[in-house]
Image (cartoon, rainbow, N blue to C red):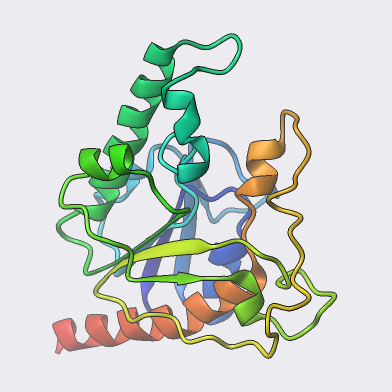
Length: 219
């Protein structure tokens, strides 16, 4: 089975999907895991990724300064912050994305992020447009289930196929609760939540691709 690093994840949703299919999967974040597990590494993904991995999926890197929805703060900082703060955080976010995207020794890499603005794109080394965009509802079949949500998600892929949709929903009943999350200390976490349907598709489709590459390299 493939050795898989799920970077920038505390929920364990993607990690557990890979584990369920027998992969050697680990999550990593500066913060501790949301639930007790011996499969979470608390640390900087840029250090952990230096080990040997068949697949690295960086699922929720800090994107507040990279995404289109936050570009307005680069010209007028929010209360209590300065423009220097905003641009510094943009540089930090772009540097993290660049390090993960350009890691040389991991054959299969995926990075998830919302739509980016032009200032972020200009700061990312070897920037390329995302390979695809997906919606959670495309991977769900229960209108009342957790996947029936609207959240445009961009996927940057290297050495991995685009995800095939696995759901039966058409988007007409999809909720918008992520976008409408109430202001508060945990709003960032609510807005970065991930979805079990997409996670299961990643584990199935990308796990198989990474395993095939590993087997070919070992042959």
